[in-house]
Length: 221
Image (cartoon, rainbow, N blue to C red; front, side):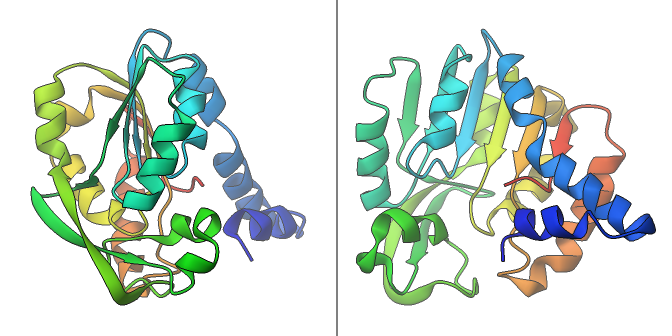
């Protein structure tokens, strides 16, 4: 059961518990479209672009979209899917907290249905829906350094990098000079697949709640 489906069901519970899941459902389903529309003339970033669904949405309003995708098969499909968009720049790399190379782990049944299973690919070996069989070495970009060089305000930063978001967000939260240049962050967290991330995600959400800028949504998918 997806988190969104669970929230949709549980928001009908009576009392405070129902209100809590109503809030979670609202946070997950709202905000992205408005943030994208408000980013006209700005640069947006798509980390974990996969096949380009959200890249295309951002490109409809943004001056430019920079999309990161490390998996070779998925990158080729992404490249074909956004070939008609002249305001999209693709990076064949994982966005991370350091520069170098990483091993990319795919779903065990990736070859049975790469379109579906490409969504699971991760540089986190302990993610419980990937296998180390046939892991691929991919380029990793120090995303904080990348933003330093980019040196411009960001409209929307979307992060769906299958567990690597925790290291990246912790590094980003430690750089308020860069952090405040971003208007909106939408990140999917993966603690259900990586249980040891639960306390770190909880801590990140506590920090995010205290922020005035940027608007940070860590319940999004």
